[in-house]
Image 1 (cartoon, one colour):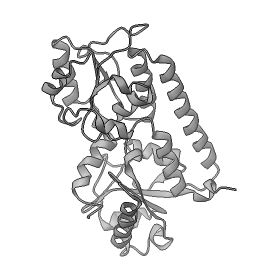
Image 2: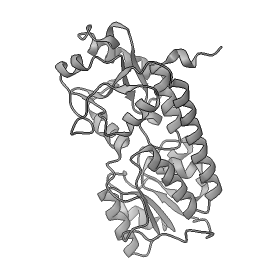
Image 3: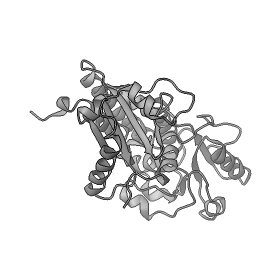
Length: 304
């Protein structure tokens, strides 16, 4: 089984960045159900895996009648009807589900879907989730329109507190330079205009890659050597068992064996992590931050 494969690049990039270009509010392209005090929608369709996770986290599992492909958390989300991918939604399936609320992301494909559904008199909510603050804001917006305001406030406060605790825990330590791998054939990494960069900094690190035009730029051997990362991290998508991480790390170690001059290789600071939570801007973002922080400063997380 080829764990770190070229095919995972596009999935990883889509899940990492969501390619969001819309607005994080009720716009002319959306029709929102009552914002305050209205009944909870009984039939909800979530048009992205992170939106599915948010709805589950708000206690709306029984109200969800449709999700998109890769909606795999919590495990019961796999039992929900699939309505295309978040990149290519199936509008016919959405209409057939007879939703009283469709929650979508703001990039062009989904904004177009929301517009078409609004013209058919379906209630829609479009949210922009490209950064951690936008995630917390989106949770509260979704809570408002689903009559789960208190649950949304508790969730966003818990995430904010957990992230603050992680940030304080690593604040006094050395800030290692991190090379965050998206794919290795060809080599592509997370740049600074990404929420992965937010995670790296929140976890006490610094992106080893200088500012770039592309969010996920390709890099050559010279750039790897010049960046001289202290830590190398790569997520593995759709991990089924611990053996996947072991195989993934072996492949990554073999790839970087030719770069013995960089600190991450000579110091054996190469990590392969479960990318399912880390690569998704959703209710597990605090777990993602801690996972990265444990790679950067494992000594700070050792049990007494």
